[in-house]
Image (cartoon, rainbow, N blue to C red):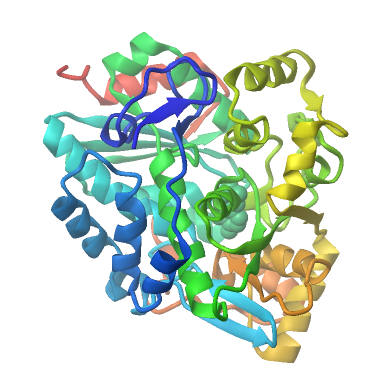
Length: 472
Ligand SMILES: *Cc1c(COP(=O)(O)O)cnc(C)c1O
């Protein structure tokens, strides 16, 4: 499998060449040259596979240049009951006839991002060892990415993590989880701004190719291709657990940077029978607006609301470019034209065009949820089924209700556990969500982080002072 850029300016490269990188050199996103097709017979043969075996089958189709035995070993070490809480890794829970919850949040940081990030930690360690070099990971987080990255990379040799987070905009649990890490290779930086300011700083540093090379800067943001690939696996796992025969299912995905639901799109492109992919947003509805109207309008920081599902508080979706690349028939010229407009005018409108009609062909639908909607959903679900979900998962469950179809199972993706967002759960139900064993006392631990203004120069100085220039 070879990889190219959505903007057409990168010579084809192998998986291990793109694994440690962020944006493609031309500023685009790295995508596989084509999607491997899984035919019905192959899919049927996967019914009995356990999670690591299924992950190996899928990932080996995207990883051409890592020894299969080494990949198998990495996958086996990653997806264990010890790390993910059960042998199924991503168990499916039936809520009522035709409605399912895909449980993705039993990893070390209690959010679905662990499923990709734990794999990435092991892949990075393997690849860096192979190349004999170090990597300094620079990332931006609104909460869950950062902690998942830090828990995947902590103590790993040859890796440092510099993680930017929006000061004061994460939940107390998220803050405690990240800022209480004392590993020497973990640096938490609280930025005076919103998540997108953090993301812009990461982009600005990464755009300085000399600095990037000199300090061996890498990323683990949701644009990392290996993360997307890892997420494809649980769509297959869920379909295999729920679908009867070869019948399709639908998925509803609480969305922010469009990484999770993009993996669903890719699973569908590979041949997985998916009827609908429902994109659920909160009040930050840039994606819902696009899927309803064809208008993609990036929001300003002032228009980006702080909500009770904060991991979805985004103003633009960093993975969206990969999807639009498919929408425009994988034509880099057409993609460049749209992104030119995005840069110049802050958005584009493809409503009524051929490209937009492809949206429905790809099975996409969308909806939006508000604070009141998610509160009511959390309360209802608890009253009717005795199940407590977090605010992001509740956004998905709420939106899913308007997209259910007779005879098509709807699988809602659980993206975090309620204990991460205790204030909102208390407000919805009056209950105190219990963190799983091992998390008690987290909030009392000493927290360690550095405050910083929105200043690229200051950030570069901070990084340079903490890592010598790369030996290569
Ligand atoms: C990251 C995250 C999301 C959004 O996922 P994307 O891949 O960015 O669309 C939703 N819910 C939770 C809890 C998250 O951590």
